[in-house]
Image 1 (spheres, helix red, strand yellow):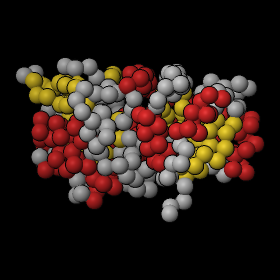
Image 2: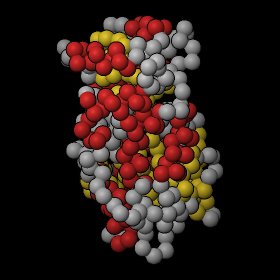
Image 3: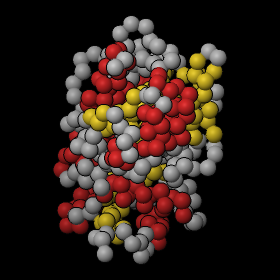
Length: 344
């Protein structure tokens, strides 16, 4: 029998702590080893309990979750999943070192099958994460963002897919680019409440124009479209170029948005003008779609094992023969630019 994942819950709500006990009662893979009602209590208990994963609220007495995570990473780094009823502060917690996040149910007295299914997957992924790379050891140094030399080819499309650890990885790629880039489309596994905030954050941090995609949005040079949470995003050819279609159709590989859905549409629409990039994440979503991009003449890049927080999606794509070049994260932006500038 496999060793259970030791989970610790940090939340000031007694009701939520009871809900967590009910949700993981007799779970085959996860065991709750302890609770804390505030960060100071958690700090005292963590060394003795030695949890594999910690769930943490943001709004708590005595110290908020963002400050706690930042302090924890410097003293006792371990995978943290933010569980909060508020979207505000989530990305600050990720910047502080949290690995992932999930929205807390609005009504704690009702059934929460979906919440626990999603949280369970995140806990399993977090337990497998290589946490050293949360310290950005692999980002590399770029003095100035770079772009395409010469005119941007409006036929080129860059498609990126990611999951666990992907918010940080995508940010590290986009911030290396100037505004002189072909259109970029991204599928990141993320709940509906957060994709708009994530797009706004990337828009502020990068030289590109980033937005949560809406049905019919044009894909333009210098623009990044993020697949909206709970919607698949597909690339379509229009008379004047490319646009996206956003659909609330059934989940694919357990996800909506699905990286496979996006990549397949990019392969069929852009063909050899496409560059597909698969980054860190648990599972195999995106592997088949990346293979299609390669089969249709596009260029494909996979993040390597050493720099991936979770080497699941890139590994699945690599094992399938979908990856043409596998690189550490800090080299991915340069490889995209090399391909665009040389065509080889």
